[in-house]
View 1 (tube, rainbow, N blue to C red):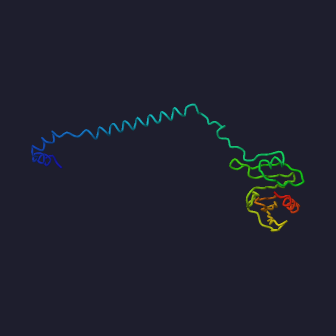
View 2 (tube, rainbow, N blue to C red; view 1 turned 135 degrees about the vertical axis):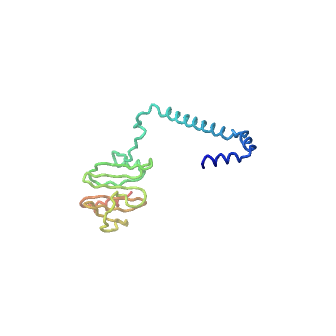
View 3 (cartoon, rainbow, N blue to C red; view 1 turned 120 degrees about the vertical axis):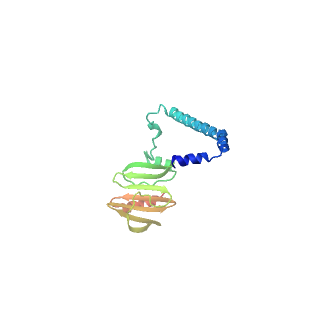
Length: 190
């Protein structure tokens, strides 16, 4: 719009409208609350930030005592001590034992493991299923020994047997001649 048209438009205005516009006062209520609300929000942010800074002082490095996890494997001295923890009988073969271990889950002893000096290993736990800890083995054969169904598996160079008896799951990882030892473990029973 050029200057002439603008001047003509202003002269066409009625003087009453101009006077009324000059007397008109804007309401200050809304802007008052907006200003005070913004100030209050800033004050809250400063207070929260200050509290967090004060709370975090003095902790330059985390305390390693608070992040340690208890060992879930308890090594014991004998089969009798293992049975005391587990509250059930653990069959043990008549050969040199390397270690007796009790596995703890959720704060309770749940599984017993006997490691033998020749590399074989026996595990027992309440329940059912494969507790050998070996996954991907090939089923070689299934046999019944003293009324108990035993599954024999092969995985790489390891042979192992798993069975369930009287509410317990058992596994035996063995080297040569393990078949006869599985029979002895089942006869001793839990």
